[in-house]
Image 1 (cartoon, helix red, strand yellow):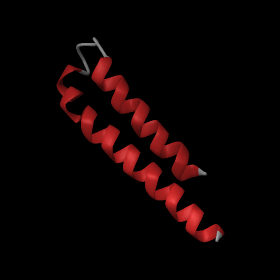
Image 2 (cartoon, one colour):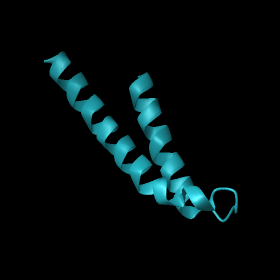
Image 3 (cartoon, helix red, strand yellow):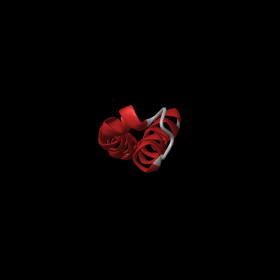
Length: 55
């Protein structure tokens, strides 16, 4: 469960960085794609592992 929450948090943080207008986060906008991809891959991997463990 913690892995799912963490990966969703990475996705939301990446979306936040992508859409923010705050000047303090402007330098970190280039990392938004990294966080979105990292969160998506972690979420997919966690779901696959939970499915394989249940069978």
